[in-house]
Length: 363
Image 1 (cartoon, one colour):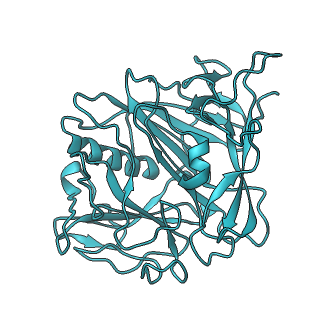
Image 2 (cartoon, one colour):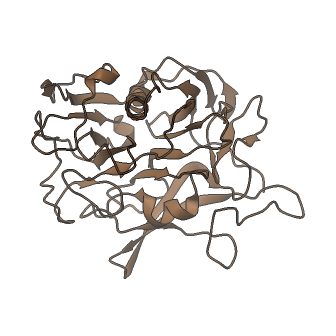
């Protein structure tokens, strides 16, 4: 099959180095700080390129695609939902895995075209995880604003009592909502390190971000927030959050993503979604990724499948959730494989997804 044209305009910034990777703790803070800067559109390092109206060039990212800060806490006693970004440096991002202590958090808001969706990143959920790495934080999303907060507690959206119904938030793992829920965003930090981050965002503020150590030949981390298309008119929450980390193998891997690491709220926005899958699969095994789809023996090309989603609600009822635009499941194509060329790519294969990344990633 021919590669479909990109439906949306995409603005990429790739091969971004960490500001400080001298310790694993600083690597974790660097990842989070860069993530925040990339959402805001204030990162100035790396290489840029764009695909606008399916034409590759270097058009500047529009201001309307940038996320804004609703408020923050630096973990040093300074906080407020007042529009201030207090994560001005790695020093102003104090983490804690101990109750009743100060810790940093930040709340960001997407452009209206994406929801808007609100994202709270919390450094309270234990950042020091077994093994001595610094690769975990809380990521909480909501279609309604976050309120409250303090020096020792993050803002919340809804009641966040731990029950699945009634709250307004969702996070990963699928279905897990709690005041201090933890997400591991990567487990690939090590010394010495030479990490590169690659990011692409559309006009609506939907994005994909991957990162990996130079020389590994693949990315160990993937995170995205995107709005589905071709949705049912009754779908009240078409925004999807995905996050995957792998060690000693490449990511994303769609088979793992679709089963547990691609999450929204239920179509009626009543609770976090119970799970999502790819409707179209490679082969009779039902596996859509992990190298199961080889090059087509007739054409020697890798075939592509669009990413369709549906929910399995309470294990008994399905709901159609639409399609994630401008990404395709590829299968066994090598990471870094680019279309149409590596010199001037419009899309790059990372893991087993073809992403709208127009900067050739150094892997």
